[in-house]
Amino acid sequence: MSTIETATLEHLNEFAELFDQYRVFYRQASDVEKGKSFLRERVKNNESVTFLIKADGKFVGFAQLYSLFHYKTLKRQWLLSDLFVNPDFRGRGLSIDLIDRCKTYCDETAACGLLLETEKTNDIGNRLYPKCGFELDSDHNYYNWWKKS
Image 1 (cartoon, rainbow, N blue to C red):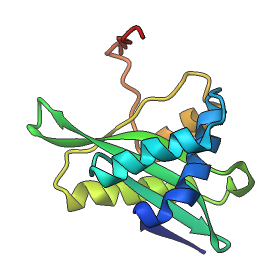
Image 2 (image 1 turned 60 degrees about the vertical axis):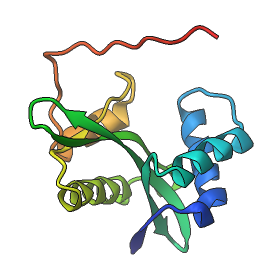
Image 3 (image 1 turned 180 degrees about the vertical axis):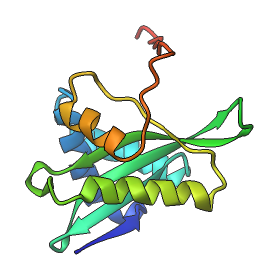
């Protein structure tokens, strides 16, 4: 049995550990303290909404949403920026539970839907998202511009 809670500053230590695991999954250097500072600002400034999932008495995954606005629907759309479940807890449907909670949040906030992107090499995600009702948008190219530091 799992439960889902909305992350607050009280969850920061557990959330930061999971966030660090997520970043390492995407080949980033482990830095729990830097991640914790980043997350503290997001929560403190209400810049993201994060759902934490608890199984076997501990938090084992999260889904983090950021607000966007869609030009066609003229409504809020949520960017499902980050989704992660600890590898020891995969295969239990926890990612699906988190996605379902995000969909419910769309209803709660009168949003038009969810947008996400993942690497082409993320085999787990690329199997999961269509199973959860997401449609691959092959009509658009997504570009990033990175400020040089």
